Image: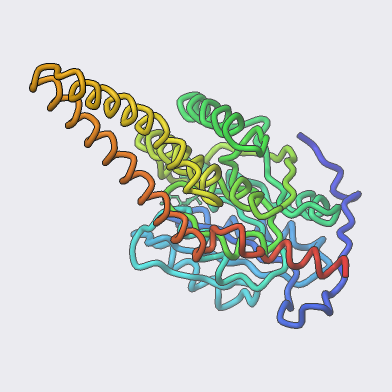
Length: 336
Ligand code: UDP
Ligand code: MG
């Protein structure tokens, strides 16, 4: 993949409508035991930053490293005013590290990338160009991915499932190299391995998402922080994600759908119990139908109660579609 970076001209104006935003770009990078990569990463970022015509910050999130990652960050901070850093007491995972970075970021645009030199900071201008075209999220696609086949294959399967079960069509959900309008991700509540679903979650609030091919390099230092157990985590997150996407705005509907078959069973067994009493079938049969009616009826009552409770929980939570997300508010304000 080759870009003519000299053609990349990033349009940038200060945003007078938002006096609290003083920076255009925050680059958020989670690091877990990446001591050998940190210094090189920063010099790559500065090389890319030479063509930035705006102020930016780099936020390194040390996700509970046990090597000298934090010591290296502290040393580099002394000579690097753009560098801000967060340290976790223990390893919380890449998603939590990214969410902490989002909270801390002051930029209007947030770019995320890995800290192991597999992503290439020279792609950042291209992502920003797309944002300036009007997208809220630009996701990188490692078209020429430099990872082992055992890593790439499960990822392809996960990508295919996510693509067919969410309404966002991307080739590479797992690529960390992404650019976001800050208001699209600041309010995201994510856990587990959910960073790959940020575009799908944000698009629920009306964010416009696109994808661009980005460079990818093989890991030079250290080792990948994930093993086969990630496959399980990713698939359970796909399930959780689909629940959130489908039912977060109206969970009662989902529970009512589940209750319908039990309701039919209740009516069926109830009818048979009535017939058993009227036609005086054996006592055993009558009791069996009455117990079956009671059990299926209880299932209906439980499901409906859960549905009502979930509806109440969601209506007061951030997932509620009755609350207007920041990105929508901003768009309305722009139109006014
Ligand atoms: N990472 C992290 N916390 C973790 C696991 C990973 O902050 O618990 C960081 C890691 O240091 C790297 C990025 O997330 O900067 C991606 O991790 P890795 O390179 O191990 O993933 P892979 O490229 O193998 O998918
Ligand atoms: Mg990596």
